[in-house]
Image 1 (cartoon, rainbow, N blue to C red):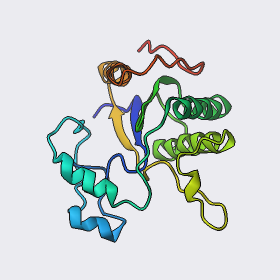
Image 2 (cartoon, helix red, strand yellow; image 1 turned 180 degrees about the vertical axis):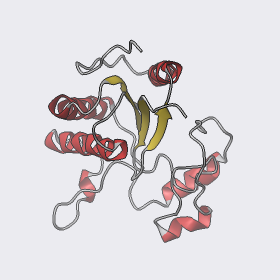
Image 3 (cartoon, helix red, strand yellow; image 1 turned 45 degrees about the vertical axis):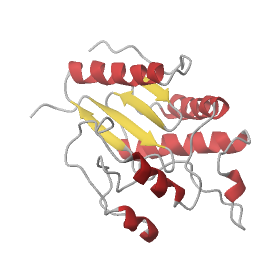
Amino acid sequence: MSDVIGFHVIACTYGFWLPNDQRGSCSDYVRAPHLTRFGPANPVDHARSVARMPFDFQLRKLARESLRYPYVEFTDEQIAAVGRGVAREIERYGAAPTYAFVQLRDHFHYVCGHCRYDIRRFAGRLKGAATRQLLEEGLHPLAEYADARGHVPSPWSVKPWVVYLFTDDDVTRSIDYANNNLRRARLPPQAYPFLLPYVG
C-alpha cells in the first residue's frame, strides 16, 4: 500500500452536518438523545465525498431546528476572523506544508502534506485558534449563549472528516476541490501567507 503524503480535512460548523445525516457522516453515535428521533448515526466506511447525495431537506431542517443552539453560518466578517486565527496557528507551529485553506459559511477545507501532529488533533487546534480569534474580535456567533461561568458553546462540530492522500493526483484534486468550493459559494478569493504551491 502507498504511503500517505497528505491530508484533506473538512471541518464543519455547529449543526451543518449532523451525525444521522441521511448521506452519511463520520460519527458512530448521536450525542444528543432528542436527535435520535431523526434516525440513528449513519457512519460511512469510505473517504469519498457524500455531499452531493440526495437527502430529505425537510427532515434536515427539522433536525437543525431541534438543536440546542442555532446552527452556525459564518458572515463575511466571521470568515475573515477565522482566517486570521488559522493563519496565526499555522504560522506559529508550522505543523505541515499547507496547500489549500478555504473557509466557507459552514465548513472549511484544509489540504496539507505530512503533519508532525496527529491530523485530527491538529484540525482541533485550527478550530480552537479560529474560535479564540472570533472571541477576541467580538464575533463569536454563539456568544449570547454563554453559560454562567462565561463559557461559550463551540461554533464547530466535534469530528472533522479526514481524507488520506496517497498520490500527487490526490493532492492536486483536493486542492482544486477546495478552491472550486469557494467559487461555487460565490465568496471572494481568500489569500493566506502560509499557503505553499504543491510541486509533487
